[in-house]
Amino acid sequence: MTIRYLIVDDEMPGRMNLRLAMAAHPGWELLAECGGAAAAREALAQHEVDLVFLDIQMPGQSGLALAREISLLREPPLVVFVTAYSEHAVEAFDVHALDYLLKPLDDARLAQAVERAEAMLGRRQREAYGDALRRYVDEDQAPYPDTISVRSVGRIERVSVDEILRIESAGNYVELHLAGRTVLHRMTLGRLEGLLAPEEFVRVHRGTIVRRRQIASLETRGDGSYWLSMRSGGQVAVSERYAAALKTILLNRDT
Image 1 (spheres, one colour):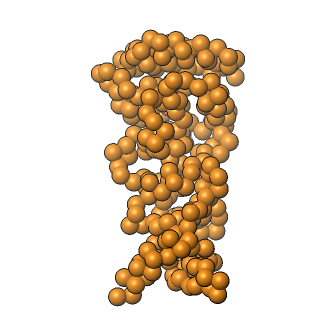
Image 2 (cartoon, one colour; image 1 turned 180 degrees about the vertical axis):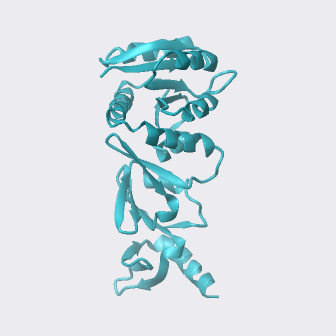
Image 3 (cartoon, helix red, strand yellow; image 1 turned 60 degrees about the vertical axis):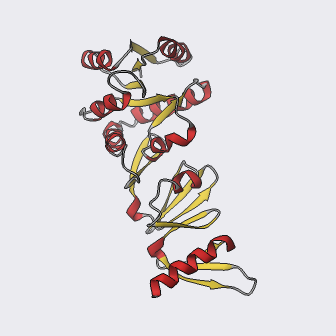
């Protein structure tokens, strides 16, 4: 399968670096290098494009504005955002299961994005991807997302934040515990915590976040450890540093 792609970047060195790096990936055909949104729009009208490497910060029309247009296409191409943003500023990409490359370009990270794109295109997931892209550009100014797009091999599943009962750390992943099932999502617990409304969720342990309305009771065991009972069933361990905050939540609820 030949994958046809565009490079959209207003800086020539950036376009050249990406073009040279992509030469290591057979089966990928570069259709055009575009210095801005207008040229990209023309290329999209002339060609059947599978993927767009899109620089976010461009003069004139920004990459995000062009992404919004792309997301409205019936079968939008995949978009891999290229950005000079720091790691801390790209959580939204992970929440929506969108790929991104940080400048300066890293060959290993590019190979990962290429592999994910090949899996996505092979499974014909453009509709699900287009939905995730639309939500990203529409919610770009929203303080907290209402959904999380979870990517498995070649597939995107949208999980409503309202469905999440608790979240547990699993290394570089988090386990999203829903009613009756658990979904694994690639994001650290600390990064995800910053994207959750604090009035809805609370940290109870170094590795656990729970939905506030799931808090049923807090008990202290003989060894001095704290345990939280969940309204949905089961218990989770509570660190001593978070116990006082939980006691306050329960006290305010009862008054």
